[in-house]
Amino acid sequence: MRFTLKAKTHSLRGKIKLPGSKSISNRALIINALAARSFEIQNLSEADDTMVLKKALERNDLITDVGPAGTAMRFLTAYYAITPGVHVLTGSERMKQRPISILVEALRKLGARITYLEKDGYPPIHIEGRRLNGGTIDIDGNVSSQFITALMLIGPTLPQPLTININGNPLSRPYIIMTKTLMERCGAQVGLEENVITINPGRYRSHQFDVERDWSSAAFWMSFAALSRKADLLLEGLSENSIQGDIECIEVFNALGVESKFVDGGLKISKKAIDSQRDLINFRNHPDLVQPAAIAAAALGLDLKLAGLDNLRLKESDRIQALQMELAKAGFKTSVEDHTLHLIGSAKSSIKPEHFAAHDDHRMAMSLASLAMVIPEIVIHDPMVVSKSYPSFWNQVEKFVDVRPGR
Image (cartoon, rainbow, N blue to C red; front, side, top):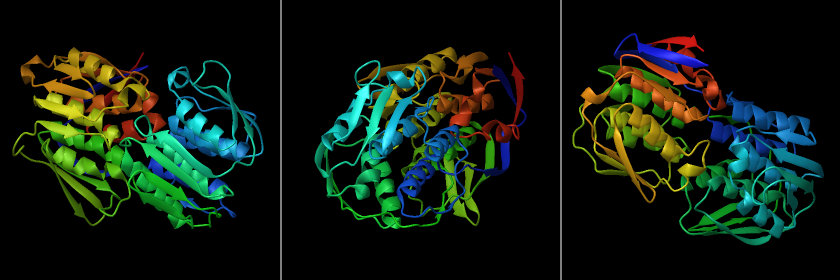
């Protein structure tokens, strides 16, 4: 399937109702499953990833196929390890290429029985749930913060304190802090000092959750605003007191010509002149903002380095390679050195109609959509992959862009 996109207007006005945070929703679901009594979760994300996790926790099947849902794979690995019974966790072909050995080895040190069913270090895995021990484990922090979060979430259920020593500078530290905050709201005792996390035994208490609106989703609309001629959009429900690290999109897109202001009801974003061009933006703590920022910056003709992309090759797609491939189609030059993507400023005259691939990656599809603001007509293949995190995205895009399906 493919969508052909053609802008109806280059002046964006109106309101956008953002989805609930997938990150908060998924953590809340695991906490709820481990709590002494279940509690209500309001504004739960409708993302495919969240629905996969919710269904798995409700049904407790022998075989669970999470598809491309990386968070569900990591969180369920730890959850099933402490849940009596036998479980097999599998996923899409891409999921079978995403390493999980760091988490599995950490759980094994706590007494978990987990075996690989195909390739060592990768899903699918066979888990025999049992009572685990506490203790001290060391874990590399430069692959995925979700490994650390998965361990943290089961920490209060262990009979002894759990100490997690993170080796190196952990990626996406704000997500670790988010996990700590949500756990503490439900009565867990969590200490975090530098790279050492300590969790005391206990039980989660029931706590009603009202899931925040998703800041990573806001970044796609900021990309639209950056490439528009004029913008006056209200992103409903966003709060300046958010526990989400991706609130950093305000600063990232400020450098790309988007002004943000908190008002009653959410965040107002508008187009502004770029005051002074930055040479480098570091995305180590907020990798989900890379794609919308990269595509907006490239289309603006900026010469910019995007650093801190340490684990982007291990996401739903190899996101560095995918960005280079799709930007090249529109005439934008890039180079890569270590974990830095260099956007080499290009003139807008090089932009031409083109077919773009989503690479089976929801964030690629949504980021590419903003190019409709600067290219007369674009085609995006496999557009419905956006349901992984933002099912209503295309319906909302239709406020400003003519979206025509085709095959």
